[in-house]
Length: 119
Image 1 (cartoon, rainbow, N blue to C red):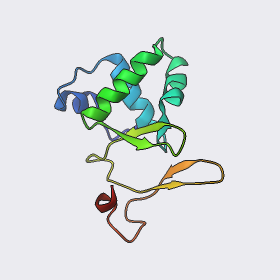
Image 2 (image 1 turned 180 degrees about the vertical axis):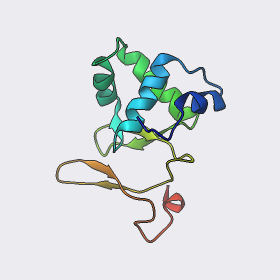
Image 3 (image 1 turned 180 degrees about the horizontal axis):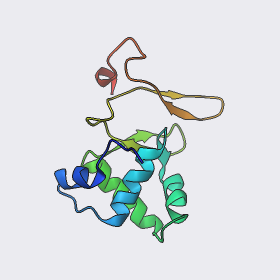
Image 4 (image 1 turned 90 degrees about the vertical axis):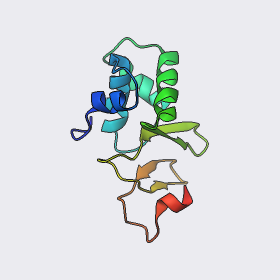
């Protein structure tokens, strides 16, 4: 969980009720150092909560549609999700390793161009 983000306030600011499942999903994607696929998010949530796989997909869609989560191409692995840029998380590039398939977030400003221009 990102200690700088107030997920309840973020949901409310986007007109969404801060339901336990929405909060848990934001906490999972906010705590992970790189974007995650829905199956990984579901697996993580199932360790501590009783949640349906379809519910996870629906909430991820809702969070992406309202601008709280960012949907990225998973480079052959389907869609992956991370927190959308906000006051605590500036836009940043990602590194995809073609050998192992890992996707890592890079520090903002590490590349010599504005990533918003190429999104």
